[in-house]
Amino acid sequence: MPVRLRPRQNRRREKLPEIEVFAIHALETNVDEGAEPLEWLLLTSVPTYTRAQALERLAWYARRCTIESWHRVLKSGCRIETRQFGNVERFVRATALFAVVRWRILYAMLLARLDGNLSCEVLLQPIEWQALYCRTHGSTEMPDEPPSLAQVILWIARLGGYLPRKRDHPPGPTVIWRGFLVLHEITMMYRIFRQDE
Image 1 (spheres, rainbow, N blue to C red):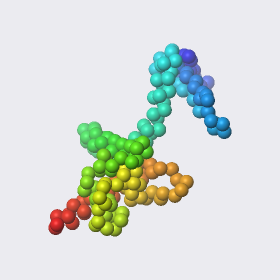
Image 2: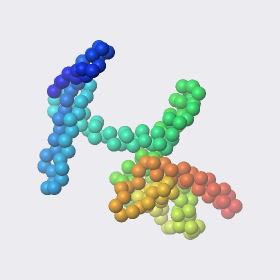
Image 3: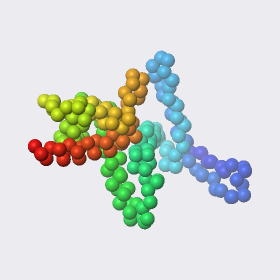
Image 4: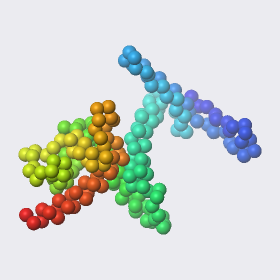
């Protein structure tokens, strides 16, 4: 339903206008015994009058975790806030490049969670996973088949400082970002040493 938000009483002097928003109240039903149902009260500026529209807005909100991860990679991994670009054109070019980096990290993380049994070659070039395999196992002997995506993401996360303890969550974007930085260096060295073969 539409609701009007009034400015706080202590900000009357600023003569802030009232804002019309749409309130969506969602309560999860049919939950397992002992589980706490989700309950969301969302406010949106997008007109919402029907059940279908409300479900669409809820689907948008459900994606917030991925969007937050996307921005975390930009802020923590790429350190966009600490860089000094000098002008807007440089900022735009860097942001476009970082978008590709963020995409690869999130793609790696989410795909490994969805289907970790895929071949790692859906994400890495052969030279990348081979360099990673050598580094992880301390051996130049390669397996007959490429490792699984889940295994490779775990190795990359370990390079980034992830400790796979029993109760830990799956690796997140920050350790995967750090791991990819190390993997880049490992791959460069691996390529150099293979030139002698």
